[in-house]
Image (tube, rainbow, N blue to C red; front, side, top):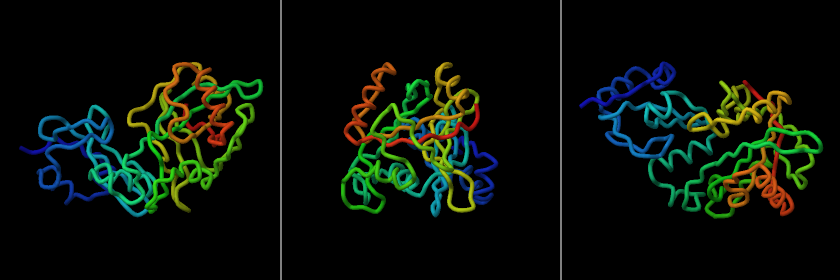
Length: 258
C-alpha cells in the first residue's frame, strides 16, 4: 500500500523530485512514525501524513506529522535544535552526547506583566528538562548561559524593563502566536528559535497589549521555576522568585505580525 503523503512545493524543491518519487512509492517513507507535532503514533498507510523538513546550519532532517496537526512545510531551526530533533526521531536521546537523558521541550506561557506602571504582553519560556551545552558530556543545565550568549540579560527585578535584543522577534499571525525568531547565520533570513507545534491562541487582552506596544517581553527560566500557572498574578510571583534567585533572563522583542 502506498503511503498517503502530503509534500509541499517548498519541501519538494528542497529534497528533489527523485526523493519525492521514492517517498510516494513507499521506498523511503516509514509505515509508522511518531508525529513531530503531537508526539503520538501515526500510520502513513492509513492516515494522511505531512512531510516536515527541518533545516539547520549544516543538517537537514525529514520528519513526519499527522496532516491534521501541521501542513507539509520547511522549518528552519538552529543546528542545536535539529540535533535534538535527530535524537528525538531516532530515539537516541538517552545516550546522545550532551543529553541528560530526557529530550527537553520548551514550554511557552503567555501572560501580561505590569512593568512600572505599564502593562506589557509577555511570554515565559521554560524547558521541561535541563538544557546542556551542545557537544558536552556533562549534565549541567546551561539554558540561561546559552541565552546570555545570544544577547539575553539577567533580570533581577520584574519592575525593570528588559533590554531589547537585536534581530529577534515574536511572530504572530491571524491573532495567534507562531514562533520566536532569532537571527540566522550572517546574510541569511531569520529562523525559528521556538516554534509552536500548532499556533498558540492568546487572549484578546494579551494581543491588544502586544499590538499597542509593538513589543513582547520574553522571560526564560530553568526548568521547575514557573510551571503551569492558572493566573497571571501567580505567574508573576513565580517570576519574582526566579529573579530573586538569579534564575531569570529576559529580552524585549518587537512584535512581527498581528
